[in-house]
Image (cartoon, rainbow, N blue to C red):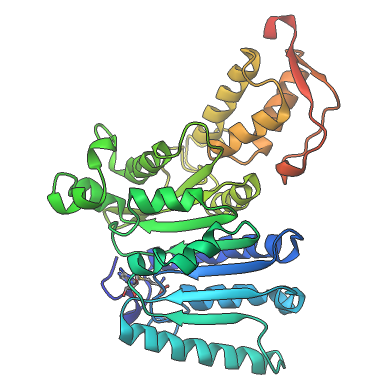
Length: 376
Ligand SMILES: C[S@@+](CC[C@H](N)C(=O)[O-])C[C@H]1O[C@@H](n2cnc3c(N)ncnc32)[C@H](O)[C@@H]1O
């Protein structure tokens, strides 16, 4: 994307990226405003820019503040614990502009909403990302399980989120993150020493991948860095701009975080929940061959779930719901498969069947699934 993104109008791809940042944060914040085990909420925008584009469209830090207010102040009026924003920008000139823009934004917000004070605490920083990320005080915040952290990493290119940074991000408790990455460039320059300095491209399975699958492939590389015994959720969203593919990668160690990010993604892409184009080559809706009930992604994951149930590898609802999540589908896909198998008399439920498919961490009633009639 553009060098100095804030000096011109945000293009469509940047607007989509910013929408996904804002909507994901809007889903995330209320969870921790009301969570009794969270004593503080900290939001980090590590590559914050100057706050607006040339047309005064809001950039990520001001979008975060705007979303944090909530419609009719529903979030800030209920914020009874410290909620802190850290906006970092590496260029001093842009960091100063951001400070000015943020002050103006907050003053206007106070005026519009008749508030004498803003309950939110914000800090504008000017560090190189690596320096800030390795700061011991910041590490303590990241390692504190009573502090909920939302982290945006809107880097240019791909050099800042290397294996080490990624592994740290997935190790922190109560930390959800989204980072931007220029996947096409990693592929195009995969043999260049500059690229290899930041990312081990020999571990990325680019061979035989179509260009439209490049970001999915980069996301799979990051997925492969998660230790086998760790329950962790990663999802991605590919953004095509011209001939290039960029994208977002989201991570959370909690099913609710993943549910919420998937909800945002499936709202943007009804076909696959992961791209601003038809990534799985579904027939276009309303085309001559369109079948509204056919969907490559959902059909593939449904078939896998059905086979795993019938082979006895998925034997309870919690495992099945998580399987859907891990594979980038909303958990209700699992309950649809179970209902279908019940109707076909291929399985029976031991316990009480329920269709709960949201807030799955709260499901108390487990049910077990037993294959009957040889699964026919
Ligand atoms: C893609 S832009 C972020 C745009 C921002 N999210 C917005 O909505 O306006 C990346 C920003 O990171 C800054 N930057 C680049 N490298 C950096 C580094 N190593 N540390 C901190 N900031 C950096 C750039 O100056 C630029 O403003």
